[in-house]
Structures are given as C-alpha cells and as structure tokens.
Image: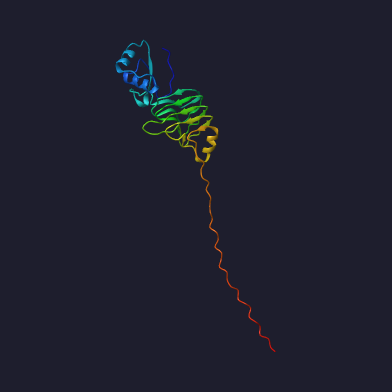
Length: 214
C-alpha cells in the first residue's frame, strides 16, 4: 500500500480499527448505527482497511474528537460533522484558506482559531454546532489570532456566532458575513460634564448721596 504523509501527531495504521472505535466513527459521522456483533462481522470480513490514529489522544482514539486539525498552509474545502471538541482546529502557524465548506452538527465548536493562526475563512456554512452538554460557539477566535472572515454564514450554534472577536469591529464583521444571532450595536459612551456652578449674585452698594456745602 502506498505510504501517506500525515500531519505531525497522526499515524496511519494498516488494518481495521477496534470495534468500539468503528462504532464511534459511525455514530459521530451520522452513519446508520450498528450493533457490536454487526460491527465485528463487518470488520472481520474486510479485505483491506486502514485507519488514522491521533497520537495526542493515544492508541484508543475516539476518532472524531477533532474533525480536522490544520497547522500549515494551502486551500481546503471540506464537510465535517460529529466532532466532539471542534469541527476544525486551526493551530498556531495555520495560514490556510478554508472555503466553500460545510461545518455542521459538531458537538463542540464549529471552528477554533488558535493564537498565532492567520487563516482566511470564506464562503463557508458553519451551522448547528455546539449543542452538546456545553453550549459552544460557531467560531472561536483566541487572543493573538488574526483570521479573516468573508462571506460566511454562521448561525444556529449553541453559543455566539463568533466568540472572541474584538467588540469594536464586530458590526463590521457582521456586514461581511451572515451572523446569527446578529451582534447588537454597542451603546455609545456619552461623557456628561457637570455644569459650572453659577456664582451667587452680589448686591452692589448704592452710591451715597453727596453732601455739598451751601
């Protein structure tokens, strides 16, 4: 079987996954659930198979803990659903363009943009994520990240459409993307200066009538 180059932290394993991992894969990706005996029979009857192990989570990988982790550059279009932590995890150094993708129905965040990541997200649909035990946002922008978002539809997620975006430019972001719930305008800060107190009026003394000599 030809070798495959995988990102650091992943390993391609020749052979079928364990029964529990196979069942988890089917549940997480939205495929028809199988019983253990059905899964065992299907795996035993496979004539060729490979699977990917994420080394950071150990050999007993829950395969869809993170749908896609990106650290480098390039252009990607994908459809991801069923991930527990995040549909897409854009790591430090990621300068990828993620476009025309569907990130939906993940238990965790739709997309996480980590510190020092500089991705561009354009024309993606990021919906119905973050409805697990904790309500999570469609897109999370960590401090120190510098993403560009253009023409995306982000809505119906458990938390905010975009979490962590600077409040001062959030309305401008909403003009370039469709966000639901839409951000509310920030109230203007009005500084009220106290009026200077009016000094009390002082009565001027009347001029005294002069006394002339006759």
